[in-house]
Image (tube, rainbow, N blue to C red; front, side):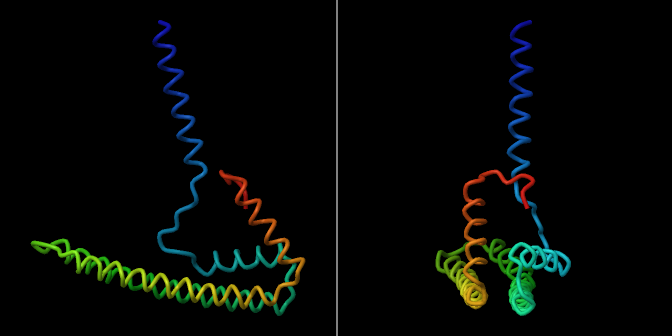
Length: 152
């Protein structure tokens, strides 16, 4: 009887731990953000930082540019997956072929990272020292929270 109780308690404990960890998982958005998500995110940033109208306009423009570029990359996804499927169907795959595909993907990701970095720098220049401090504090809080369930 005692072994059965221990087994039940252990099973429930494992179940609760798994559920707790899964609650910390970030929301998955397979199709990216839509215009409503983007508007909500920019509104939340503008509200938290108390942005001026010109800063809000810059933030919206930058967010739209990044979303457009990300959307263009996402539109190419189907073609890349078809190319990968065709590659897998071949009798043999060479390391050079795989390296070429990986290099192409890394190049596109690097281009996107550079694009986002340029926009981040441009937006950073429009912020006041107080706004920059607010962002720095949010970043530090985010880093120290680990599991962010319920924090937005």
